[in-house]
Structure formats: C-alpha cells, structure tokens
Image 1 (cartoon, rainbow, N blue to C red):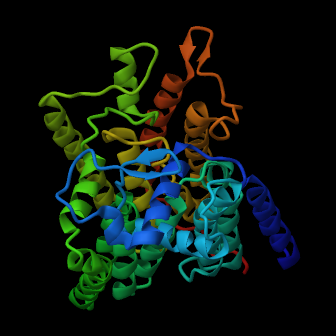
Image 2: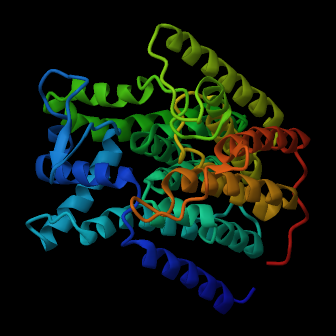
Length: 420
C-alpha cells in the first residue's frame, strides 16, 4: 500500500467519525456532561465531594442528575474538556457543541492509538503496522463506540494498549505508568496486567529491575491523581464512587454474554436482572474465580512467547473472557479487545476471522440497545420470528470465546516477515 492510499483511508475514517460527532450518543454522554461540568468547576476532588460518602449522592447539571462512579483520571480528563469548553462558552450551554466537545475526547484518544499502532516497534514490518492501524481505525464497531455513541473506552484503551507495547519492548517503567493510567480511567484496564507481568517476568536477566520499575511508576501515577483528593478530604467519597461499579447487583448490564442468557431464562423478554440478596456476592465471587482461572490458563498457554502479538493475544483473551463470563459487564466493555486483536490479526491471518466476529458482536450488542444514539433510532430488531436476537448474539459471543481459546492454545508461530 502506498503512503497516499494509507493517508486516504485514514482521512476517510476520520471524516466519517467527525460527521458523527453531533449525534447525541447514549445516556452515558449525559453523565459525562454532568461530570465534566462539575470537575471543571470544582476540580476532581470537588466533584467527588468531601462530605461523608453516601450511596445516593448525585451530581446535577441542566436538569439532569447522575451518580459519579468513574476513577479519578477519567474524571480529570472530562474536567479538562469542561475547562476548555468553558473558556469558549462561559455559560456552559448544554447543546450540540457540548456533545461534540465530550465526544472529541475519546475520538482524539482513538486517533492517537491509531498513530501508536502505525509506529509501534513490536510489529516488524510496515505492512503489519499499517494493517493493525487500519483494522482498528476503520472498524465499524470502533466507530460506533467512539464517535457515534460516545463511550470513553478508547480513552482507556490508549494507555492500556500502550502498556502492552511497552512491556513487549521491556520498558517496565513506561508499562507500569501507562497501566496505572488505564486503570484510573476505567477499571477494565486491569485486564492487561497478566500480559505486562508475563512479559517483564520472562526477561530473566532484568525481571526484578523491570518489575520494580513498573510498580514504582504505577504507584507514582496513582499518587499523582490521588494526592489532591487526599488533601481535600475526598478519599472516602472517591473510594465509594469506584465501589459502586461492583455493587449494582446486575447479572448483565445489557452485555450479550452468558449472564444475559441466564437472565433471559429468568425473565422474558430478556432484560437486566437484579439479584438483591446475599447470593449475589457468592455468585460474584464464583464468576471471578472462573474468569481468573480462564486468564491463568491463557497465561500458561502464552508462556515463552514474549513477542507483541502473543502478549496482545493474551490481553485480548483476558478482555473477552471477562466480557463473556463476568457479572455486571456492560454492552461496551468488549471494546478493549478490538485494538488488541487488530495487533494480532495484522501478523496472524488466522485471527482475522475472530476479529471480525468479535467486532460484529461488539457493534450489534451496542446497536441493539441504543441504535445510533438516544432518540436517533436505527436499532436492529430485538425480536425476529420466535427469537430474541440479543440472546442469539449472546450465544454467538460465548462460541466466539471458545474459538478464541482454541486459537490461543494453538499459539501459531509468527509468519515470516513480509517486505516492509
């Protein structure tokens, strides 16, 4: 592919996503507006509040209310967007301009991630680097998640994927810092930890030094974000906010996975099912044992193969296992697997079908529940003949995880380098 062709494809993808920015996105965009307004006016600590933590504490803006339940780096990023927006529009109008400002945050992160894939040293050929970038940037599931529906998953994916790339290059302190940043944006960033730890551990001569550097850099990044919160006396509220992410008592938050199937067996038509008794905590513990066991198996299957593609495959499997098997997964949580699978598929053709299927699941899952955004419509039908399409999609997702495990277990060797 010529550089002119590459540039044309990248610009085409950018244009499509820029045109989608004015669309209203999901209800999450309303939450991001509220948090951006408060974080820009009061700072992150002020947004969490300094009073005694209460489960029903809510932030309000322009007649809308929402609980703040994101970690501090994600809130800080929204605060930066809010401050820039306030500089241009001091009245902070809640209109299409604010929607565009909020959605530009994940779109910018997604664009930077594309450039990272184009430049990553872990992909040995120019063709592989270009393939990874285009498989990610032009992926309809990515466009739907980022520019159309306005989720912040790309903001977490940028440092998470960067951490895996750094670990593959034996840059422990960079991997640790980026990993901490990803987790402080969205907790799903923790799912790349097994690949980072494995990569650094298998560098036998430098393992302890690189692990120590990674831990130190991660701690420094965490301290950077938590120091102002601690100084303001908002620590308890910040902890309470993140705690809410595991106390919703849902089997599935509209994620078409094994728990959506279980919920469909309990309630028809399929919908979010709450488990409000003590059995929820036993179920939560049991599911995490299963998820962690699956990830531990994947680590064993990847041992001895410290190249970037293998580490990305391990991370993608960890994300996929979590998205299919864990409780409280939401419809957008599979996103992190997409750039990771793009890295693998760029070097290993047998992963391209899996990338296509996982992308299809991610895109259809979001579209089934939110169409092209709040009030826009164009959602695929939930019921066709006698079938609930969301349950069928959940079955497909479960099968795709089995296929993913089979590909990881086979651990195919990297193809001979293609001409750069």
